[in-house]
Image (cartoon, rainbow, N blue to C red; front, side):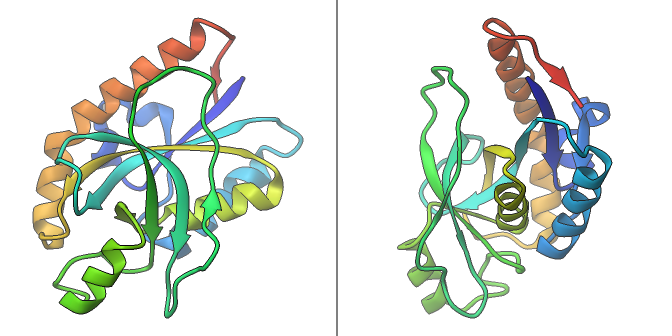
Amino acid sequence: MKIALFAAIEEEVSKIKDLVHFTGIGRENATSSILNFIDNHKNEDFTILNIGTVGAHSKPVGEILRVRQIVSGGTTFLTEPLLTNKFDIEDNIDEVTLFSSDCFVSPHVYSLDFLENLKTKADCFDMESSAVFSIAKHYGIHFVSYKIVSDHLDVDLDEWHRRVNTLSDTLCNFTLDLIEKLKQTQSIELI
């Protein structure tokens, strides 16, 4: 199995950055990055493994989550969530619904009323996953996503960057362990 690891920024995965492709922050950057990658890997069968950080309202900071479905947000909510895939391994990790938008989800950006409504639709929040997943789905590419909780929708971007640096080793170790588990049942090539 060929796996293409993707994260938004190097700080999220600094220890394994040489194994990872970066989308940049936001759906527009992610779209461009993923399309470019796919263009360079035509006729290859691979899985996109999307890793990174998310804000969450009820999960503890530092917890690893597996994205089960993605809700895309803009001016309205997508009514049908996009269901993602998983690897055929036992991992005992909470499956969550992720809300993906173009804005950093915090009270610094959204009103408290909007955030309360958002919490009823999703467990965690990021800015790239819906774009990466939508393109993967369009091209028939298997998509799996694991995220680490960085905040409770209560920090600004500066604090988020500090937390990302603190959590990076945990996410990297998890990712390396996941790849080792996969290697127990099949041949793995990171592309």
